[in-house]
Image: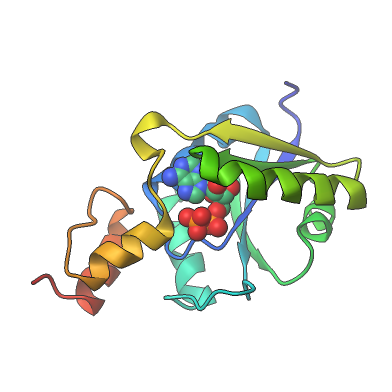
Length: 164
Ligand code: ADP
């Protein structure tokens, strides 16, 4: 794979998990630049943290990677990719449940922007069943999430949801 490409990695990251970070880090080894794109106003979702908080979590957690940038957007994913001159949309693929949605999105994006390729990295086995919604359910009932999210997120969650 040519390494002079820019990839965007879009998501709601509410909150960012070690599974997301694994995909971004692995992508950063394969692409010249990876732009993590936070979706500002996800449809059908009320987010737990504000856009500013998400950006801060992502920036702090990825600070050691020089070729990773963090941005936010409120437009089509393909328009965000074009803005960054990215030719790749980078996504993670977990268990079978991700496939239908991601396959449909990839086809729609391909129709709108044939020059942009969606590239999937398979989730690492240890993160294959990790999701932001799972993290939110665990913390809501006072459970431990330190191994599932980066330290900045774990700290903020501990403040907001004291352990029982
Ligand atoms: P979530 O589905 O957890 O709410 P997002 O909407 O932020 O996450 O998804 C952004 C991208 O990250 C999607 O491509 C999704 O498949 C991927 N992703 C989410 N969690 C993981 C994980 N644990 N391992 C690999 N990829 C993941």
